[in-house]
Amino acid sequence: MGDCFDLGFFVKDTVGKQLVRAADSIGANIAEGTGRGSYKDNARFITIARGSLAETQHWLRRAHTPQLLTNDQITTLKPLIDTLAPKLNAYRNAIVNKTR
Image (cartoon, rainbow, N blue to C red):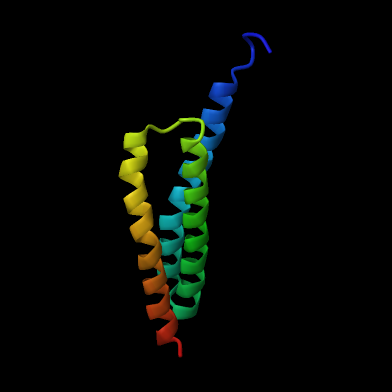
């Protein structure tokens, strides 16, 4: 492919941007749901945030495979992601229970 196409840059750029967008989307959806003012809307946005969390996990795996992230970075991020999933579920369940 020559010097004009750097696949490493392409992968880093693509995976990196997707990872950041997915991770940012978690907090953005939590904030938007909270700002909606109803438990039903809030629960719906928490569900979307859980989807963004799953997407973040996917992009982290993709970043680890071609070694775009170091083992130290993965070791730092994995516990945060692993603890966030049950917290989001508990938060959503508390909100859903208020709508009943």
